[in-house]
Length: 305
Image 1 (cartoon, rainbow, N blue to C red):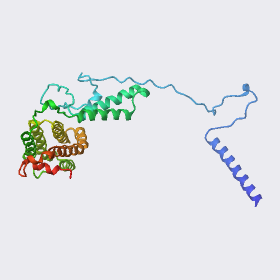
Image 2 (image 1 turned 180 degrees about the vertical axis):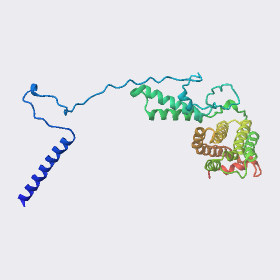
Image 3 (image 1 turned 30 degrees about the vertical axis):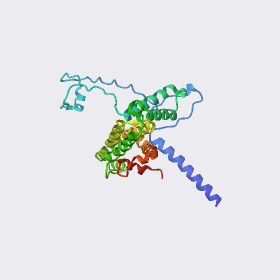
Image 4 (image 1 turned 60 degrees about the vertical axis):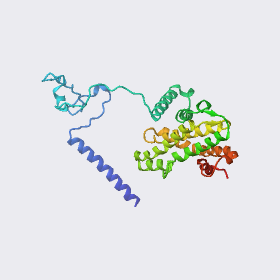
């Protein structure tokens, strides 16, 4: 078997050599014996050489602008015949206006701070520092309320008559301005945001007006001596609720303000309850001055018991 393989292999190799020689002779290639030196080599007609022809000169393409409009004729195909017209009702250039909403102002400030930090490189503030500083600015500017002090109130003498008048006045303010049947403030905000309907926020208007009126009427109420602190606390908490609800109403126009006010709402509402409770406790020692039909009785709702 081994001998047969060797014979077969030799036959294949020999056939390949014969076929190669036959192909070369038929296609004009003739092998010549190598000369013993360079002087003995002669050039024959059958020698093969690579010939590189000289490239032809490219013709110059003339630029043609038949209508002399500055656009070459070949480019005319890409230029629209009808000019593009921009409709405008005014030719005046619109003047730039600085952003008025806190949301826009904070966005610009945050962008500027980020660019400044990138320019400073490693010595600049980090992203967390920029965010913290921006948040502090937001808290100080968006939730800063007017604070009423003693200069805003009228202090009168402390007497049974003035105390009775004072207590009934505060009770009557609550009764007169109470908004009956209103939905909760947070429920109104939630419904407006979920339905994306800004018109629902008008439901806050009567409540906002209620706190404004209670603030103003309480400011105009004469205060007996010894009641100044509790009275100012009540005025300022009315003001806080008025400002917070007004800010919450900006949910679609200035969402940053609305978000900060919503976060403050619970604290303000808790403060309102505490302020009214303190008024009640201040009046308790003078309970004998009042009757069950007096408006001051409404303050019993805020009894700590």
